[in-house]
Length: 439
Image 1 (cartoon, helix red, strand yellow):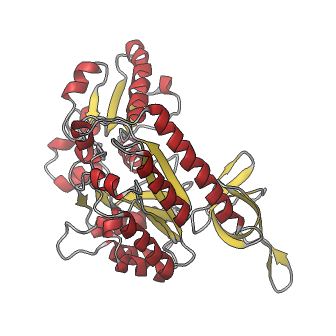
Image 2 (tube, one colour; image 1 turned 45 degrees about the vertical axis):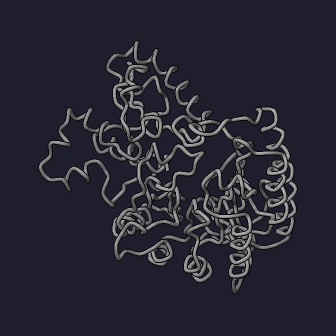
Image 3 (cartoon, rainbow, N blue to C red; image 1 turned 180 degrees about the vertical axis):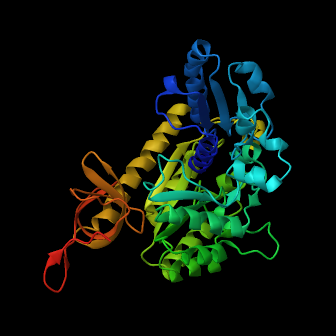
């Protein structure tokens, strides 16, 4: 979500005549877009801000903008006292305060609200920043802002506000605009993306939105994240199964495998509910990959409860497990009502156990790709190798002197590991020759 927000800020700044620099010392404007989903992320953001203070002392005209979840939707009063060298504080997904500051309020005084939206690049026509235009293969498109579910461990609802779906027309128009700029793949974003449309009367749900995006010329692949098990319904499963451009890769966090911990987290389902959903998805989409999120060391989690999580992960053999150690987030229900009574050492031990288990699981899953032919969408060249992803979101590296950026090509897998695979471009026989396709 922050990547998408930053692109919109960059577009707005270029509309004002600014251009990108990767040297902070050369900048007239510095925007730090922040995440606070974990304490470590907040600490990192504050540390980066501290490193910018000397630049402000040396150049009083430098504009420093703090944006995102660290500011949150409740304002920046406390932060102003702590960070006097920051000029502008912007809530998530809103370039307005920065643009208003740079134009001395000109934008927000515009009589035509639609003109103001366009000036802020907040309408459906997103023009990518020049550094990405024509080079970006995969783009993120927010479809749901905020969240109203309020899991007890999560700060996001308090920082990003209530759940609100974007109008379907704005989303479709933005994806069309991205396709015209060379984007081949879009990922639809929401804190709980499968709740898209729940707050819009007579509008499409996520399955309906996927069907609309699927028909846009130029878009080869469509993904979405992150889903919640409570809202992943049959219509969504059918849409993924039926639409060839919607990739068979599903992000479906379980967070914990014990029913008591899940209840304390206010997740709204049981371990068996999750197992049944995975079985239903695999029955309808046999070759899909599934990713999950897991938090270890939630307040009160016993060894027996942790082992329930271990057994679920061992049984289901999911393709990806994003692991995190619980950290207290001020303002959440868990912070107010629950004691963080699992030691850091124990959290790390549990983390390592799941990490080792998942590495074995993924190595086994990926080994089945060895010798197989799969289609890869190539994104960029990294250390003389082209990097791309399969439909199931497996990372693949290919050595080639050709320009493969944005190409969707068949490859033969020659090596597999737990985190990536290596492959060679597959030769395609034509009437009179053998060639490697470039389109």
